[in-house]
Image 1 (cartoon, rainbow, N blue to C red):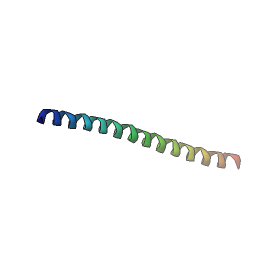
Image 2: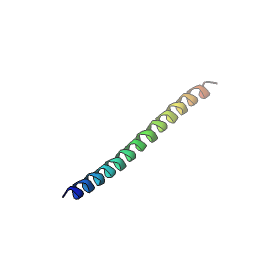
Image 3: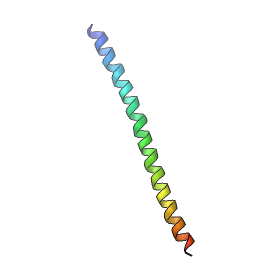
Image 4: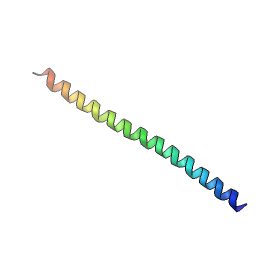
Length: 50
């Protein structure tokens, strides 16, 4: 019974780790996209005023 509990715990930890990795990756991607868009907007604002 102890081995199955440990196995279940490790499977749950791996799944949690995978979900955490996916959402952390999405967070980083969205942060980069936001920074790129902000930079693009500033670029367009300054380039249109020339």
